[in-house]
Image 1: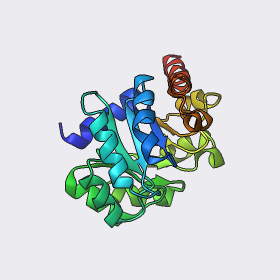
Image 2: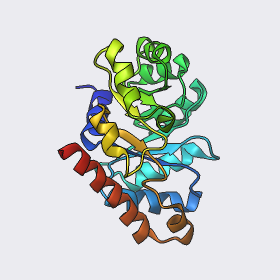
Image 3: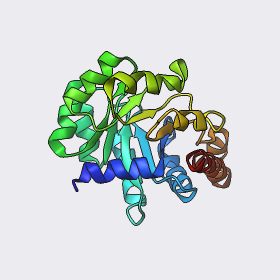
Image 4: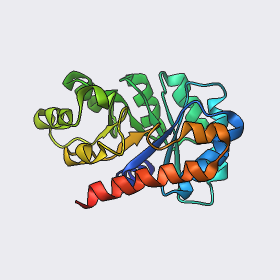
Length: 217
């Protein structure tokens, strides 16, 4: 089994990608540790802030003794993809389809999940070599869009992200989601601002509970 196949299995088995966006550099490590302690094994550090590569490397070092999988999100171009891969990212997620990003990840054997919404985008991503498809923003189209895409396109692994919450996560899994990505539903921003890692852990754990309940039905 290749490394990206292993990462894919970890994402699908766990069912949750935690999206860490806009977290101060000095807080990213304790927040990542708290979220992992809550039962989230897959963490996505977004690359839309400053020093993204350093944040990814710091989290990767912090969780090196665990089963965590650390990757990068909001990767818009091949140069950024290369940078986060060099920093240790085990997967790369984009909000759109950029074939150059997919090719860079394929060249390094790193799992890549481009963002799609239309059948054209989905096919473009699949033909470029995507491992997973990120349905984004999922709240705009809703759970039924998963079936609308997979109906004509066949067996594709879709990860809805953007607007997934404890209240609707079961609907996305019922519709056929392979996993889900979530930021605000997992990460309590007020608790992060207060430095309250216990609350951060509790919020993340409640989302994990909702996912486990949804997948056990």
